[in-house]
Image (cartoon, rainbow over all chains, first blue to last red; front, side, top):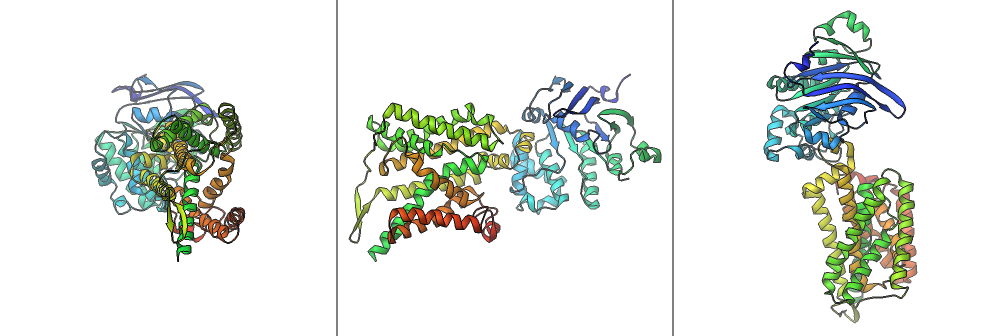
Length: 244
Length: 293
C-alpha cells in the first residue's frame, strides 16, 4: 500500500517510534509518513501522546525504539539544536515565547537560522502577521495569549523551516485570533513552501487546515481520516469533549 | 569641603570595588543560576596571575588587563567543561562541587607559592584632596569598574551574542529549537563570568594583599551584592553596590572599617527582608526596572 506521503517523496518518515517519560511509555510504535508540502493533522484526546510525539520528533524526548528520518537522513539520535539546523521548526504547546525579550527580539531569535538578511526576513514574516507590527517594542510576556501564539508562529517562520511542528496552537486562544491563524497558515500552506505536522484537539481548526488527519490513540496512529470525515458526528462522538 | 570630597571619593571607590567583586559572579549566577562558591578563588587566581606575570617582567597593565582575565577565563572554561556542565539544574551539587574546587585551588596555590602575602606596587602615586592624601590608582579602579559594567551591559543589550544569551537563560529548550546550542552558551557565559572575576582580581591585586586565602575576604560581599541586586545583572549589581558601598563607607568614616562591614551586612539583611528578590526583582523598584539588564 502506498501511503499518501510516499507519492512525491517523503520529507518525514517515522517508523515504529516509541518514547515516554522515564519508565512510563507514551508512544507505542508510531508510523507516519509526510510528503513535502503536505499539511498533516494529528488528532487525539488528552494523554494519547500528541505532544509527546512532537517532543520526540523534535528531539526533546529520546526515542526508546523506532526511527525518525528527515529528508532521507536518520535524525533519531540528533539533538533539538541539530534538528532545528536541518530545517525543522517547532511551535510548542504553551507558545514558549521569551517573556523578557521584546517582540522584535523574539523575532530576531527566530532569524538565527535564516540565510537572508535579518531585517528583510522579519519584514517578510510581518506581512503575514500585521497585528505584531505595532507590538514590536512590547515584551513577549506582556502580550495576550493569542498575540503570543502569533508571535510563536512568526518566530518559527523567521527561520524558514522546511518542516513545521505545531503543538495545539489554538489552546487558550480567543476565536478571532484562531481565525487569523487559520488564514495565515492556509496562505502558507497554499504556497507549499512549508510542510506542517499539526497536533490539535480543535476539530474546526484541524479540519480547516489539514489535507489528511491521523488519529492517535494510546500512543499509536489508529486510523486516517479526511478533513470532511471529522465533521461526522460518529467520529466526533468518539472524541467526546473536543471542540467542534 | 575637602572632607566631603574625600568621603565621596571613598564611597565611589567602595562602590567600584563591590562592582568588581560581584559582576563576574552576577553573570554566572544571574544567567545560569549556578552558585559558584569558588568565585573568591577565581578572583585570587586573577590577582596571582597579575602578580606573578608582572614580577616575571610582563608589563603591569598587560598583566592585569589581559593576562588575568584570559588565564581565569580559560580556567573557567575548563571548570565548566570538566565539572559544571554535568551539574546544571542541581543547585546543591553545584555548590558542593564549587566549594570543593575552591578548597583545591587554595591548596594548589598554597603548595606552589606558599602562604606569604605577595603584591605589586600600585602605579600612579598619590594625590591630595585638600589636606588628605589618597591614591590616583583608586580612580583607575573606579574607571575599570564603570567600564566593566558598561561593557557587560552593552554586550547583553546590543550584540547578537547578548540576545542569544538572554534568550537561552530564559528558555534553553526553546532556544535550542531555534538553532542555538545551550551547552555552548553556558560554556561561554561561564567563561565570561570567570574572565570578569579574573580581571577584577588583577585590578585589585595592587591594592590588596595577594595570598591563597584572599578569596575568602571577597566572597561574602560579592554574594550579598549579587543577591541584593536581583535578576537584572548589571543594573542590580550597580544599584546594590551603590547602596551597600555607600552605607559601608559612611559607617566606616564614623566608626571603623570593621563596623563598616557590619553595617553592610545589616543593610543587606534589612534589604532582603523588604525586597526578597533583590532591588530589581521585587517591590516598586522591581516593577520599574523589570526590563533592565
